Length: 476
Ligand code: GLU
Image (cartoon, rainbow, N blue to C red; front, side):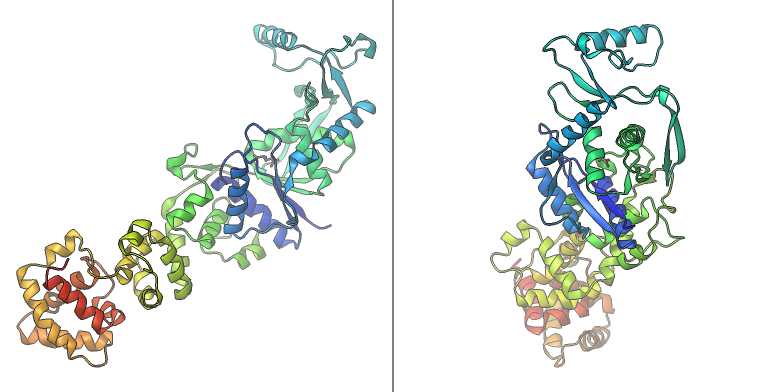
């Protein structure tokens, strides 16, 4: 049997990070089994669905590298409404469903009676066995499933285990509303069946729906898929996830400077484990992923862990690729300040050379971009407060003298520059830091930077001397 999984988001907002995890698990499970992963847009709630949300879902999936196999045309649930209706009518015809003519008022009375008498609130089945001739002429009706009233419905779940509900606890659910539209519960089941889905891996919030969905499947004599309900993600304090806790769209993570590989790795670990492994490549994840190791308690979202995974992927990334990604993150203000053509070949080549030194510290591309900006900005560089503090009269006097020393270095390697500066500082009865700190301030505009002689070497002699001159001529 070919494994077929699916990801069926409702396009009512961005691709939420929790949904992205659900998509990932389905994708991994399908890829592990050489199976099929399907995307279905559940857009039947027209009032809440938007094209912008569909675009955000598609973009988010692509950014995360979660390719789906029904990719000729986007599967929109709304295009299959006629089919869902047909199934409800089929159930009606074969006695597995019936028309219920209860008015809104009648239903409300039923509920208040149940409430007053401490009874469970559910439809009491009053139209279940009534004769068709009782139907009020021309009155609106809904179609309800004639669900079994005895026995039990069992969900065998790969995460929750076996969970049983007495059928007497479940009322006859609505399949078609009085305007003839199919309900969500029916549409999901029919689409899953028609698409050949045999593994339903989804958020735990859908668990209770499963009993009802199984009842529809049984009524239609359709096979029941395998189920795995993934515990939800909580905030780091164990509370329900909120925006503060990271409940954001995938696109926000992109904008914050997280790499897709890192987000994927982090989401995998958020609710699934492989021993103590934290860094798991996609290839390994496909090889190892199973339903048995889905963690059965809610996962806690933790930015510190995400940062650490992201740092790892940044360090591992090819420097040219990383430089391009960093250049893409450099913000518009910096860009406009730097005028046109900031990321030219020289700038990119400096970034590539500087990347090994820069990427050791940053947690995300945004931080990396901020710390790399000095390589790219045209002169004169803006100085931060730390740099200004360093550039005292004494420091400037030192820089004035260092110009000649630096100018005399022929092979402009970090080692040669450092050696020359060190010898000079010592000869002057100073420490290396007395020369290195002013140099750092002049070359990076900051009091923190990668090793300063490496910076000088990457900038080259002309740019290094020009940046020193800028500081000395109060050009900044
Ligand atoms: N459309 C549902 C959602 O976005 C998913 C339904 C399902 O997985 O069965 O939550």
